Image (cartoon, rainbow, N blue to C red):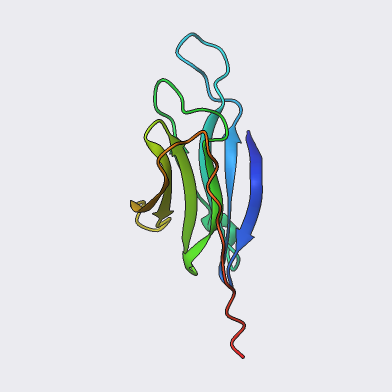
Length: 121
């Protein structure tokens, strides 16, 4: 089962959100709160894609959040790790994840993100 986490963002063609996979099993047989990202094409919701961060041990619950798009089909998300907070992009069509920038070297200090919206005027 998928449980949304954080905000859902959308472009003209796609929506994306962080999710928890609440029925994933941990190594000891218990339920593990694996993190993932879900992207859904607005024109065809059956074309949805799921990026699963299913490492063992599992990442901290809430490690990743969608923060927008770098292009209409490329979700941007933050990933809090022991090395810091990264801004990454994920191409749901190819499955490729790329680092964009290290936002904060200390994950205990939340990064401040600011976006500008081009209204085309």
